[in-house]
Image (cartoon, rainbow, N blue to C red; front, side, top):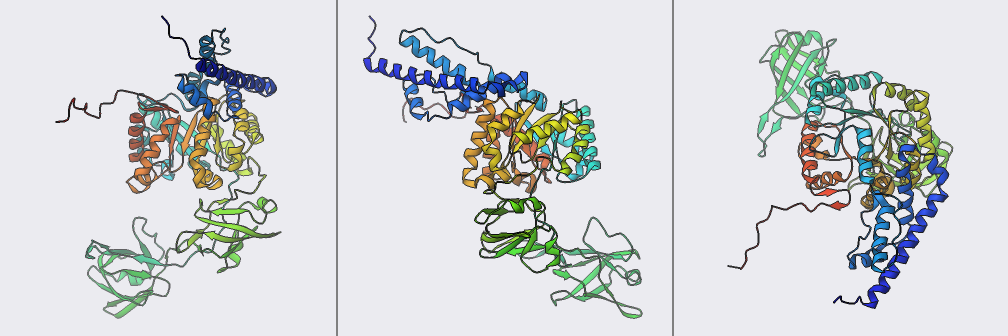
Length: 608
């Protein structure tokens, strides 16, 4: 005999069915309202665009109480419905109708969003490597333009997409990089795509006067201060090429010719410290000298060499000049000038130029300014025709140095900047010859996407993949519009550019912002690149932090993870490959995969 269903359950099923029916009606109403926009989408992506519209309609509502109620009755809570929103809702609604003894709603679409997303990732990035579903993108260092062995190692270790950053280098180096990637990929029998990142309208600090010409020569010491290796300098006769492998200075040619191995060189360094150097090698045009004490060489320092004709002296030349910098602390007033070279004409003043003078008419007093990836913060106090004044409010303890060519972020300002600069348009002429994907930096609205698509079409390159770099607050706020515009292109993707994005949206919001981008992109069935500072300590310093390992593991929820350059880049690729392979058996998108766990022993039947 069947147990009668409690009236309370029936009433709750009715309420749940009604709420789901309302949500479904909202989705279909939005689809009808946006029909002209959906028609503008590439025919291959219309189902994806409709799914995005359904997802946006769903997420207009606070669904938390609905989710709890569905879960109490053993039904799907719609918590992983991004790829197939309407089918997921209709399946739950159908179950409720059957429980109520009512005709089930006829499903309007069949699930298949995850398969479509996988196909779109293949089209954009190329096929995934065997054993790993998430691709690895690598920002190519300058050496990749001429170092065949390095590029071959990157490919062999697992690079699936090579990224060329047009903010650095030139057409010749980019072309050489792409050619070496193609050559190495062909030799390895692999598909490796090339992405070309346009520089975009990046605000940067202008030039600064260079710092003093000083060379610090320091011996290596152990933990007890004992010298393990002496300081070493190469003394080069004037007119000869300095040594690229070691610290070197230029000296008088006749003075250098008189040096012999074992000779002593006496000097008073830039700090007034007396030092004696010993020549360990000499060939007439250059000599190598060593010392067990730290020495500072600067213009005006004289080197003394006692020889057969008495003590001979020489000055030192060819000293490197340190990069110029402004020392800033909270409370300082910094003048940001329209003239990018303003600081060169006012040495010693707290002023610096800006590379995009267009912003000066668009900023207002009271708006925040961040410099150098958020390391220095301030608020605009006043503006005029020639610039604006920033009161510094945040630096690290003890102050901070602001150098040339550092990023400027204006998160509160509504900036109307061109999607493609004149440089971008010139660089596109190179990109269409060497790349498979073009990334649009600082994408802010649908018109930006249209501008790039038009520029590609004018160059006969509409077949190239298009990647939207979401790195401004406005870009994040306009993400649905950007995605719909990108779906008009044959192949498109999204990069979560977390460096500028964190500064623009606030560090405390970055975690939720990157989550929301992942969800929206999955709803649009657009592949995602997880980028910025992934395993950065490993790539640059040889050892990752614990937090970086966790962050890299989270990248398995994207379709591609990007590494930046560094001396340990090859090792970083191998580590990332290992992490992604391990994690893909535990996680895909928002869904945890309950594979059999064999890490733990079975609990004993009884406590001994």
